Length: 149
Image 1 (tube, rainbow, N blue to C red):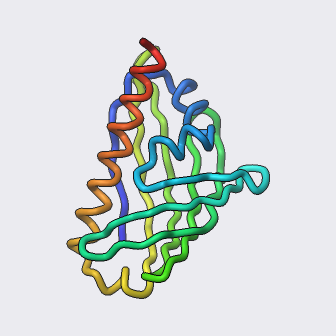
Image 2: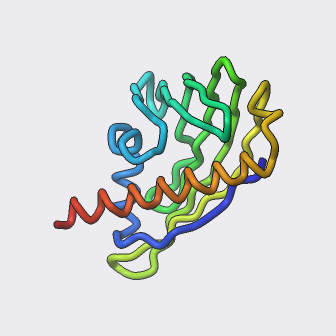
């Protein structure tokens, strides 16, 4: 499944970078993530509860931050397992400066699904992916507004 999108955020590229490199902050704004624990340099254990259409499951697995180019880009490498199937994804994230207080965050990547997840249907999964990415950016924007308040 292809993943892509972008969103304009009212923060500098460096501010976004600093926030997105903080696992507690990332867990707070990522839909479904209930906990992220550091297991090594740029490696984390992530636990998530996600509902995808009629399918609901708890996921547990690794998240690694790779290919870091501060403050412009990084790749999230995700391997999550659950009773309803597994997800493996590589998502490249770019942060482009618009001006001193505004940046464009874009992402693109691929997710491979197995088990019941893979049988759910591309249209359902694409809709869920779009909803989750919208919720992520809305949470990011709301947290930045609170920080700047």
